[in-house]
Picture 1 (tube, helix red, strand yellow):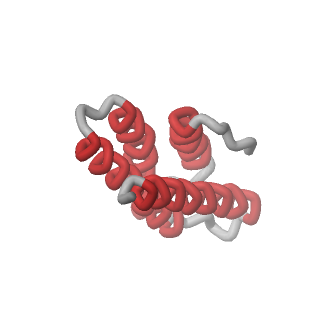
Picture 2 (cartoon, helix red, strand yellow):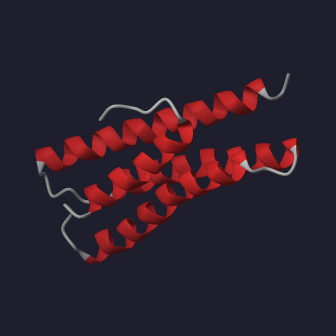
Length: 117
């Protein structure tokens, strides 16, 4: 998956990739709940980044970026919890999404650190 340079596009792509990924999962009781959570949190990363770009103040921007980082971290948790039923190709897709959520967390963390100057 090529990573867009534009962070708004990248966060939206992350949410889209999560939605494609969850379609491949078995619909067990636990997975259904975890799927709901990861779909919400991945979409929230993108939505809050859009909100950050429309922030009313620097304080509002920082709060939205903190939410983006939190939601990316939460997405990573739910991705780790879903049951891939020992399917190596599904697990490979999960690992790529976990990597992307980690990279997004790091990017948002860097934005926050840079803003503390």
